[in-house]
Amino acid sequence: MGDLILAIDQGTTGTTAILVDENVRVVASHNVEFPNHYPQPGHVEHDVNEIWESVGAAVGGALAKANATADRIAAIGVTNQRETSLFWDRHTGEAIHRALVWQDRRTADHCQAMKDAGLEALFKQKTGLVLDPYFSGTKAGWLLDNVDGARTKAAAGDLCFGTIDTWLTWRLTGAHVTDPSNASRTLMFDLHRMQWDDELLGHLNVPRAALPRIGASSEKYGVTKGVGFLPDGIPVAGLIGDQQGALFGQACFSAGMAKCTYGTGAFILLNTGDTPVPSEHGMLTTVGWQLGGKTTYALEGSAFIAGAAVQWLRDGLELFKDAAEIEALALGVPDSGGVTFVPALAGLGAPHWRPHARGIITGITGGTTKAHLARATLDGIALQIDEILRAMSHDLGAPLGELRVDGGAARNNLLMQRQCDLLEVPLVRPKVLETTGLGSALLAGIAVGMWSSADQVSEAWTEDRGFVPEGDADELTGLRARWAEAVRKA
Image (cartoon, rainbow, N blue to C red):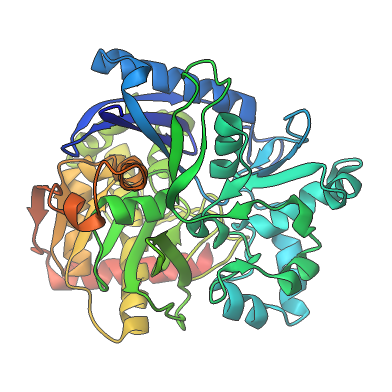
């Protein structure tokens, strides 16, 4: 058996390949970006051929950086942007349409119609989710209704449906499979029975014949065959949605442990153990992972826009050339100067669930500078997370003890300190920030026997830096009040 695990971390703006050795050390990683497509306002799509090209390039880049050959790969783990989904022809492999990205809002009216029909309580009870265009089920219905002949082909079993983990595994191995963490994001999966639900499929008008098998998060799904950039015979052995992968990669294995990943969006997951906890405060109940016959559940809150707000300042407003420059720019002023930015560029997620909300900037004066706008953007990201975690605490009836943070924006010390001050709990940043990919690598390694259990790999988790609250209470109270007023207007 080889001595490396390959993780393919397929995200919203790019694909990262990560090579992990037996000591749970990231040997090399390589990221390749690809474009998003915006055919009209509210529509966000991916060309899956461009995604596949990025996967091949990322894997080749990581192997080159590690000076390693592909025959050293013992297994492959896949983690993915979760709700992004597509149909493809079972016989030709061709996608029938671009994939609809999790940020896509085109099914907002469909979701509202189902709410008006009184279906939200049913969906929430069975799936742990809310009726929002974020999730895959209404995307599947839209594709079947808007691509000629798709509904007939799907009912006949000639089309495969899947989130990106499923599509990549199919491309790598020919297996049509997903795991419970991804299935639990579709509006089609019963959290309690751990299977596709015919009643929900009927309301969404999606045929079961198109859906993948649901395996565990750690098992051998198949082996590579005819891939081109990898030799035949490597087992694909770990599948997990990216945010659940980060929870696993952050070694949050005990109930009550939580993490926040700062990527394109920001995603908070809190381990609730072997019990799905219903939310009364706008959170989602989701599967964390299924390992060794045991299911771990989580509460989740999602802010659709986090790092994407910084990208907008960079690309849309051209305030700086590199996203990393925002920290130095924001440090040029002591605060936002009364400016509040609600980054609802793709609607508002938890706890509001307002798909038609849009971004808003308030408090601008003649003295406002780009530094104030940069500071307000970082505040806006942190305030979204503050709202979500306070709602989670209400659901649990207990305060959070600590938050583990990861993702690209977790490198921003100003943002992390601001987040810590708002939450009033310690933040801990690990040395490995690529925790989404690390989680899938660990699950794949466990499946092929490189590691014996989650307990073994948790010993490899190491802290880079901790943050402790040091904010001014009156200033933070005023900040929250301005935020709440701006959110009402968004």
